[in-house]
Image (tube, rainbow, N blue to C red):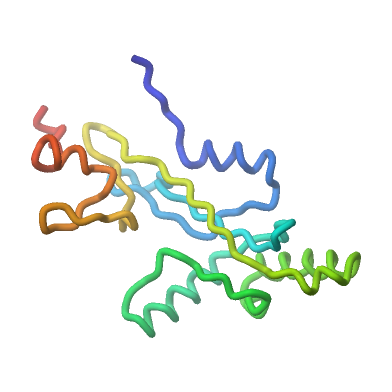
Length: 172
């Protein structure tokens, strides 16, 4: 059997060859190897017909801070705020660039003012892998699931289901 070794960065680089405007605004690194990106999150901003740009890290930080302040928890999704998202161009240079692209499109066709503006999230996730006989999982897993009264990483469900818990590869 051949090993398939594709990382989130490989997928992102392939996507960016065809979509030059995509840029990750947040990530989760690995648990055993901190220099791996186990999850890259790209939040595109656009209308039903065109992507104008994307959110930057400052917007995600501000949104998560405010959501945590109000609800005492973080949010895995980013709700669409319509054109009000452009207010964040005051603190986020990526949204400033997105706003500039939008205004150029409106200058070329004023009817674009009446189109809705949406946020579309693209999540690139690399399943856990074994590095030096240790599982490299997403640090701060956003895909936890309940299993027999406890929360587990959803990517490890088969280990719990078939082996009763995480397989300890250091002992094998």
